[in-house]
Image 1 (spheres, rainbow, N blue to C red):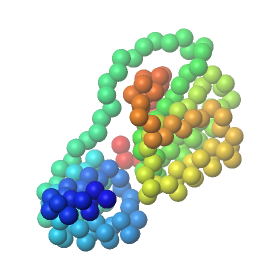
Image 2: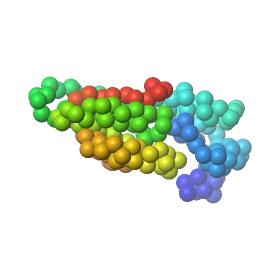
Image 3: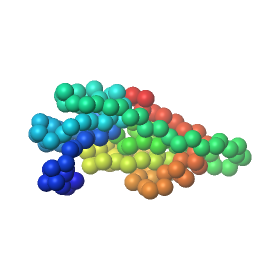
Image 4: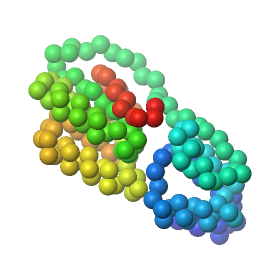
Length: 168
């Protein structure tokens, strides 16, 4: 809807790409818009830039997202120990691997795993694949917190941040 509004208002369009996957319908629509209306692209990583390289002769900029620094605190590790990941739910973030680690460590009742992040319509299938994996393996030690507004507070609860992304 925002793209249609920009076209009607005759405003310039800048695409922001944070993903490495899009279905062919989205790519087709973007190619049509690209020819006439788009004046630039912003990418969250080099891998995003490489995936969308068909958008040639555009101003391109990579802006890396970063986690906000938080103070680490020492905890009594006899209580709950939280291992977490904060990422968009997509195959490139390798959430299934994170779940396999949780499965391996589920014998330790004091370890909890948290997955914080958004999932986009294009990644809905992968998100449900992750939920099914969790259910089939009875991973009661894993919590998904998706499409939340307050990730910073939840992120600060992690004792260990585990990055399972295949591209970072």
